[in-house]
Image (cartoon, rainbow, N blue to C red):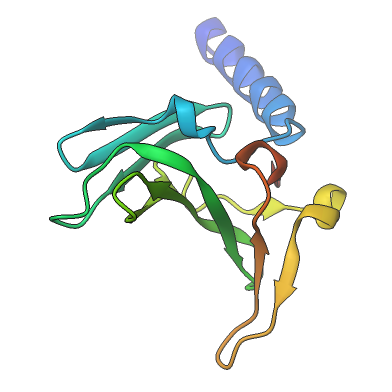
Length: 136
């Protein structure tokens, strides 16, 4: 077996296991940049991106909520922010959008909401308080 391949596999498996135990959250409002109608940020969870609808563009004012649909496995749906023009923008994880997450260690921040079609978990405190981990 090629030595480079062995090193790559070793590094990848180590990075994945460390990443799985990292406490993650929605991006802080002040970390979000806006160019035209595109909002973006980066934190330990990965790249975040969102598009504001036409006429809804504005600077990010504050964090509103994070949403997880209660499907198995759990996946973070979005993080929503208030804009200074009274509008909203949703940010979604880019490359890690489909990764399963766990909120077991952080349930005090997440409230279960029973819906007509599906249940969800909402976090409406501060962006950094809406914590989760990627499942392995």
